Image 1 (tube, rainbow, N blue to C red):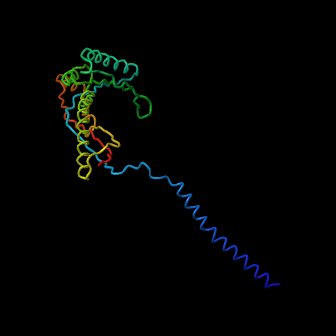
Image 2: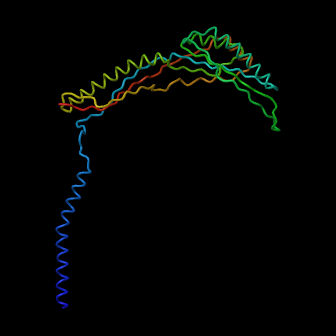
Length: 257
């Protein structure tokens, strides 16, 4: 009886082993088929691509001057300080408005504030305030002359920048030049690689002022009223200097036979 049972058990194990040997290849084949079905085909991947860039630069004279002027007053009463500031600012604004000329010169206020002054005991001992205005435009000679004769105002900083009109004019020419250089370089490099031509796949155009925007402003030392009055007799000497504009074209081309 035991011999029969052992024989039956051996037959059962042999049957399961045979079934696994038959089933395993089928399972593996199904897994491979599933992986292949889930892997996206590499369709539309461009070949023979070339990435390159070209740029153009030029130096341009900064043509827009900005001069910031300020008046400072102190007193024991906040209302009196405010009134004194307004009187000086109104007079200066009226004088400046008569000299404005559109984009050649504009005037704008640039701050009006009053702060308390505290003594050693922490109590308010007085008030101080300041008000400012800014002259800006392309007529540097007029701005320099006017800034020196506004009554009660002291020059605190000056700075040159490139006007929007000048920037747009030069950037348009630089963009055309950079694009032409990009196309010439793409054609030349395609020939070196044994191709007869190319097609543009993607391209970006970037413009920038290489050495920054406005020339760092010159901050004027604070002077006494007597010194400020003497300084106002002469026009402000200024020099704008040069700005470097640049345009860069970057992109990818597909070389063609």
